[in-house]
Image 1 (tube, helix red, strand yellow):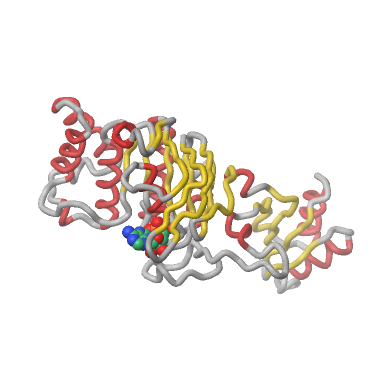
Image 2 (cartoon, helix red, strand yellow; image 1 turned 180 degrees about the horizontal axis):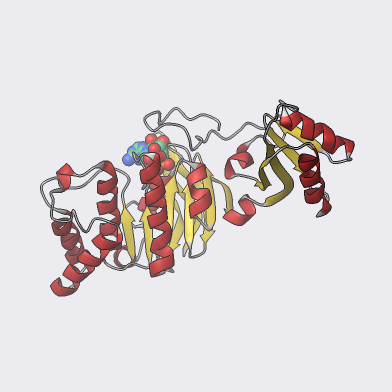
Length: 327
Ligand SMILES: Nc1ncnc2c1ncn2[C@@H]1O[C@H](COP(=O)(O)OP(=O)(O)OP(=O)(O)O)[C@@H](O)[C@H]1O
């Protein structure tokens, strides 16, 4: 879907992309990086809107230098920053963008109505965009990226400025763009956690260089650890400690993480041992689940000398952008 070869973009004061080589298959792909990592620069080069300093790139098999206009016919783009005219309605704006993409008037009208329905703006479609909430504006930007039925959409920080519920809705919508219409998606975010559940594949860049490009399943491989949470009782006011002692007594390796017990699963019988230990103490089992590596964990230092990559955790608030910190 996208390939880059030693792609480099130098601005007078900063190298935004530094010999980036990528090979991305179709699907829903997340491009993760902290602020200034080079995500928007990469997207603009892929659209043929910005010239690279060195290297090559192609999108859907088309060269970004030679075939920029062909790429833009087949690709939808949702820019990061607000760029919507306040005085027109969503219908007028998206229809205009559909016509700009070359659709005949009747088809453009039909596609506009369908797309606005798909992004959940059908009821509001005749109101001026200036009165829309941030979430509604993001949906208009998504609708104009989809209206000409592209093969691929490039979505630059589509969850920016949204509250947690708005984020979840936008991420579900993005997932459905692929499952319902078969359109491939490249979505950028500085929040690792949100891409974990949305994307099939994640590409991580930092300072314009590639850190990782891997399937989400590989990123979040299941581990042989089970998290167990139990209730307390009058007899056992610290239920977790009591279960921990019982398990250690049965030869099970277990560590306590607050109220959570992390149990090494040596084989299937470990599940029965945990159940029997909890029942034997007369406690209730709140949770017993397999632990997975979250993407965030991958950025913890691997060696004592290694520095963590400064990505922001999912729960950090918007508005503190630019002050990157370790999750
Ligand atoms: N037109 C420009 N002129 C000079 N420097 C630029 C220009 N555009 C981007 N940069 C610089 O290039 C680097 C990469 O910027 P880019 O916008 O691609 O990052 P990003 O990962 O998209 O971050 P953000 O999410 O903050 O937009 C940054 O250091 C930025 O300041």
